[in-house]
Length: 196
Image 1: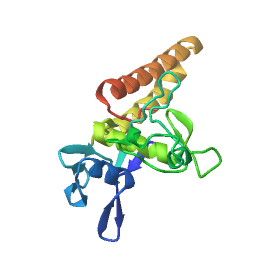
Image 2: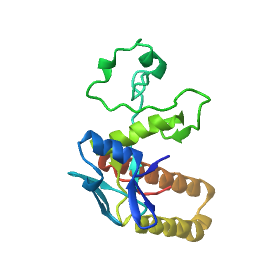
Image 3: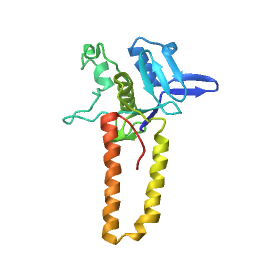
Image 4: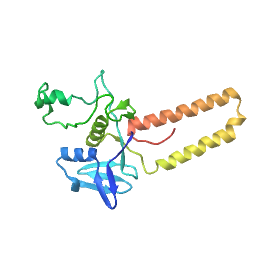
């Protein structure tokens, strides 16, 4: 799940998602502090969140470090039984949900093949609060379309005229160029432009 719906439309009303509601509550903001700018994104207090036209945010997923999950997961039973000091959670956002294997559905994400929905929600909340999300500029669809035409032109006009070795070299070079540009835009600019 790369895109997280931040606002859901029901008839003529807009409702904030769980991730947006949790982020708003952590900033002491309410639903009235969410300003929707259709086609651009939304504002949560002073935070500007760029979304796609469907009001979905391209979530940033935090990688595990040194074998530890980006977000700590504790057993509810251990907390309830008193095995974990409740003071551990003071001043922190706590999400409660099923995360055990075999309970509920799991999501495939860029950092995990199986992620519990509550952990995916933690990534989305953190993305909002830290403004760590990928932005798709309004012109990105034009770039994607232009790339499709350029690749098609290469395959139709130039590729058949090249010798096998040259065709393989040029094709691999084009693929590498697209991958490098795609990844560098994501890493340096947090920009998502579909180039694959």
